[in-house]
Amino acid sequence: MPLLSPEERERAGRFHFEHLRTSYIAAHGAVRILLERYSGIPAAEIQYRFGPKGKPSIWPAGSLEFNLSHSGFVMLVAVAFGCQLGVDLEQVRPVPELRDIARRFFCEEEVAELETLPVDEQERAFFICWTQKEAYLKATGEGLSAPLDSFRVPLGRAKADLRVHGCTLLQLRSPEMPAGYVGAVAYTGDARPVCVMRCIDCADLLG
Image 1 (cartoon, rainbow, N blue to C red):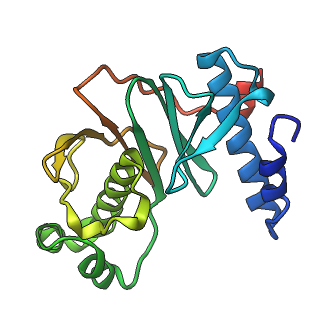
Image 2: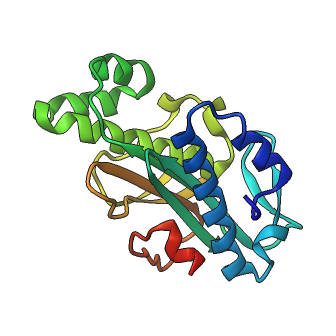
């Protein structure tokens, strides 16, 4: 764990299961290597600061922004200059109480749209909706302090402009993900070119 900060090492050590510890170390080490390539700061020397809701950014502050999410053994990272970012990644899996969760956390329009879909499509649509909402909240820095049903996202669309409370514009994109996963990226400001890198193994970054 030579690339990680003392705080990251301490957190890694708190995982009871080896696979979770390994996943955490790989994800956070890979992010540091990626940020080194964009910022020029050596990976082990990168310092983070955290917003009021826990959102990380590079310290000292600059125009480079990043956000990450990992689920299972897959990680999604977004890096950009001059805009706020949020990403979320979920492994599509059976959710027996899917409709109850949707009715509790999604807005009425989203629930209605979800329930009109064929049963075999609802599971994936549920996670697409969830990841877009999480990505939006992470981009704005709100985290889960903002109710998930306070705004609507378009189920299943790859790109959409979203205005919430009349002040924040985000571009929502669902990048191509490995089989069995869905992910979303949200960013503030006007539309900009988005480059989606191929899926890579963390070991590739070390090479």
